[in-house]
Image 1: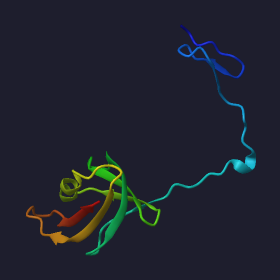
Image 2 (image 1 turned 90 degrees about the horizontal axis):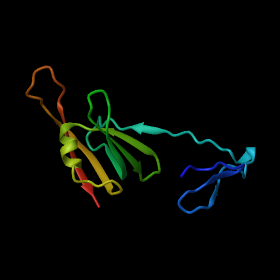
Image 3 (image 1 turned 90 degrees about the vertical axis):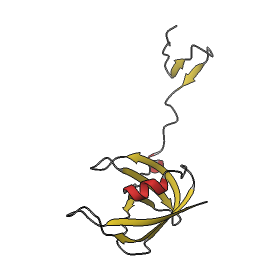
Length: 125
C-alpha cells in the first residue's frame, strides 16, 4: 500500500492514521544555534587526566585508531585518540560508563625512530 500525501502530512499504512508533519513554525527568537566544541586531550604531562562519561568509541583518525568521545565532569566534550595500550585498557569499558584515564608516563619504544610508548591507568565505575 502506498502512503497518500495530504496537505499536512501522510497517511500511515499500518495504523491508517494521518501523521502531521511540519506546522507549528518556530519563532525566530526560538532558533538558537549552539556551537559544538571539543577539546583534544593530548596527555603530554604525567598525571594528565580526563574523567567523565564515555559517549562513543569509533574508528577514525589518520591511522584508523579508535577515537573516544568523553563528556567530562565539567560538561565539556573531550576527544581522546587511542594508542595500542589505551585501546587494550578501554576494551571492557562500556559506552555510558564513568571512566577516568590517567597518563602515567612513557616507555622507550624498542623500534628505532618511533615515538615513546605512552602508558595509562584506566578506571571505571
